[in-house]
Length: 111
Length: 113
Image 1 (cartoon, rainbow over the protein chains, first blue to last red):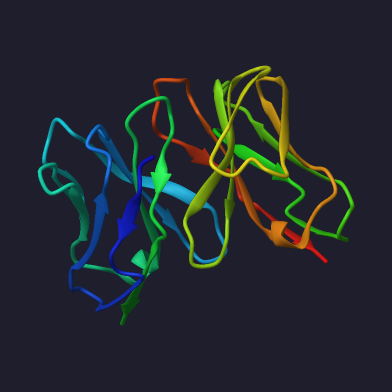
Image 2: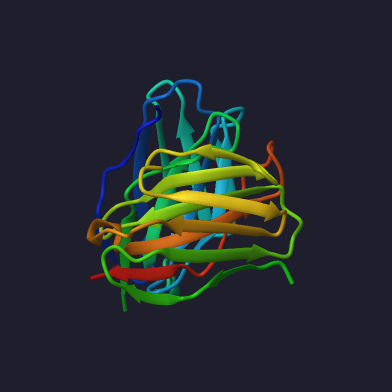
C-alpha cells in the first residue's frame, strides 16, 4: 500500500517567516494530496489539497507544490502567524476514498 | 451546520470490558471512517463504510468491529478491550465514494486500564 512520509517531525519558525513542510509518497498511482491541520487538543480539519494534474496550488497564504517525478509534495505557509501553530498532516490517495496519512509535523510559530 | 459528532468524548474502561463508540453526521454523507491516532503517529484506518451495511476493513481491523444501520450513524465496537487499544479515536465522513475531502469528528479519548 501507499506509504507517506513527513520529513520534519517538528518545525519552528519566527512569526512572519515562511514555513515549509515536505512529504514523500511511494505509490505512483496516487493522484490526490490533501493537507490537514490539527490544533492542540482538537480534531483535524482540511486546509488545502492538490491533484496530480497540476504542480502548484495557492490559497491565500498556503501554497502546495507537487513534483510527481520525485514523488514529493510540500506545503508552504507564508507570513506565518501564531494561529498557524498546529500539527500538519500530509496525505495521499489514489482512489476509493482511501487516504494515507503521514505522521504529522508540529509547527511552532514563535512571536 | 455540517457536523460530525462523537460520543462519548472521554471513556475509561477496564481490560476485558466491551466498548461502544458512536459517530453521527448530519450531511447525508455516504462514506464514513474510523481511525485511531497514537502519539507521534498519523491516523491509522480501522474501518471504512461505503453506506448502510457496506463496511470494509482498513489497515488495523483486528480487535474491532463496526456497525452501520443508518446512513448518519457509524459505531465502533471493541469486544473485550485490551490495554493496547488505549488511543484517540476519530470518526470521519465524506460525501460519497468519489469524494476525497473528509470531515472529522472531535475524537474520543479511550483509556483501557
